[in-house]
Image (cartoon, rainbow, N blue to C red):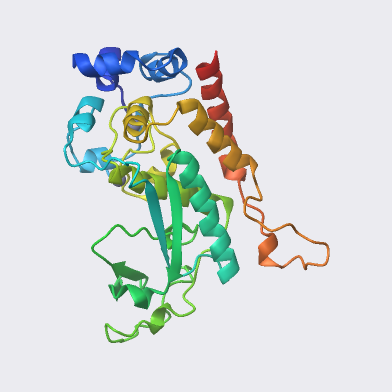
Length: 317
Ligand SMILES: [Zn+2]
Ligand SMILES: [Zn+2]
């Protein structure tokens, strides 16, 4: 196991930069926000720490790329910044998540609420789910695994592979026998296996969604500290990375969106606590199997909730 540890000076420059305009922009942050951001280079910080590499197949080892500090992010002419006219994130669900349409709708609402807290200040809109056939994307059956893969020119993230059994030979989404289908026959997706809705699936989905949307705002892979924006090559590595941003990436996102850190962290805590957000009240007559009474499975988020509470304490000291 190897650790990528940067010097205090390197992290400080990555966060604040040496550009006088950006330094004075930083100085204008409120005292609590600076105190939290400076945890980035406090050697004994228990909020932020170095990146740990677990194997040679980890992202940083296998995809060398130039690190992006705050100044580079700020000066990137291609990054997308929200404006009063353009401040919505659209989520298009392709196919269903969960075994029924109502579980799927519930699940996507949890993701929407999560994104709204994470990208605090922006509106997240759900588009009507569409079947795979409506995308007119090509697909293939993986020769080795027999799993279905969709090809597209835009960012599509599959949550199927975040089910606990996707990589196992028992994966139920494996097609029983090689099916010869024409490229316009989408019937293989009918009743296709969907992973069971668990807390870990929700956590992995939230991580993937916010990581990918982070890229849309121009955040590149983080090589500074353990962070949601670290690249990942495989599920173990994705599981290792934290749910939230290091201070350097946080300053980037804050500069793009313009939220107060305190408001954003509080919104995230509210999302974890509101276990039944958007869930209709369960009436006694309703059967236990009624999918509408599905509570949001937030057990996997509890540890992170503790972490946010510590961040809030630093902000409000
Ligand atoms: Zn990425
Ligand atoms: Zn980061």
